Length: 528
Image (tube, rainbow, N blue to C red; front, top):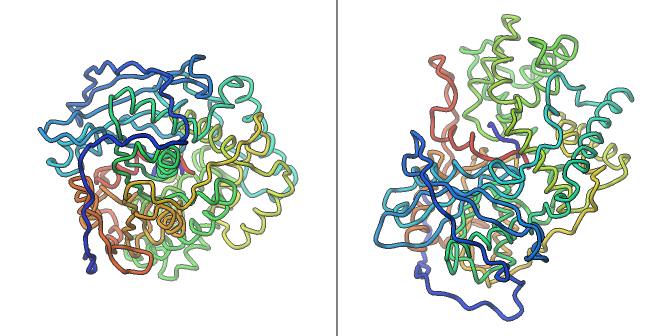
């Protein structure tokens, strides 16, 4: 998932034991990397203005967990230490991606939870292998997303070839630079890293809170080490049965629906944007803008591919809609491309951290699971999808296309079987989430037999806790405080919260990112 971007209905509650009693490892459990003895982290102050008690450290993990005495790599950690007498252990947090950095997320989560709850945990962020401050950090092809790229829709053999050449060259660059690392860039390896972190922190069990791809990482960890899980929170849940080719295809229709929801929102605010009151005509104007940018990119930077990059974050978070609508209106009504360039720079452009995130994204997803190696299959599937969902189908295809040429053989994803071994987990899901469609949360809820699912009804954002919805956050705080879970009968859901209202048009030119939701969505990892 690319970054950038009520009332509880009669649920009964059940309380889960909150002690930190050690649980003996199960006979036949997957080997934990206990043969590798990680040193305790040496925490140092790394305070920021927003998070003055933040600390940083690092931990070494095996590059290959099957060879714990071999080469090691370094993972960067951050921590907001607990301050209460009651200590509930480390709470590891992950923002998704794969490829998202979690160092700042630790501060955000600790500051956003109720003070009494946060005080009982060491809130620990980490950069997974290959990411950010961890070493080595991947950057296969710096500037891969520099503007202006070829049109994402391959309307001619020449355009298709240009995009294929980009995908192949990126895959080849990754192989040349990181051929020794790529075989070990998997979600399974990252989950085993989590257990080294657990051991280094001196914890018998960990608490885990993951967003987006971080839900898949947490689910895999729970599958491998159920006896090491104490609390498990999954927000915006990846469907483990679609990893990863099918999941990306499934996203396209959901993102198309969110883009059309944005068009409907613009239509309802015609007094501000002057684009009309007919959502279909407004959508046609957006695609006319896209066609015009193909001939004359705005500011020499925003062609059709960059336009899609700019508006895709609106599918993740509707808090960006007012800014995107202003840029759209300025271009259509005033022939002014300046706001569009500004929106691209704020929401769509890829910086050095984005280059790193994309390198890790491809390294994990291309290695994690089997992808078609015959481009004819991609062509067929994506043209069929484009006919139903034109907004991002081809943009998404090219984002993942290096996997068709990946220099390392694909592995098989972990099979997430139905289990009652994992302690009761808490899942959060919006009904209209585009990045991780709703059914994925239902699937994981059913496979984690003692889990509870809290649904944000009518919500379309991706990453919904600690983003301003008090109903959702009450469930999160109760679970982290003492293990309380909702147990209700709302179909697949145990509790239902109403979605927050859609945003209003801007009343000033204030820069984006002031609301808590915007801060969170700036931290969530790259597109899945």
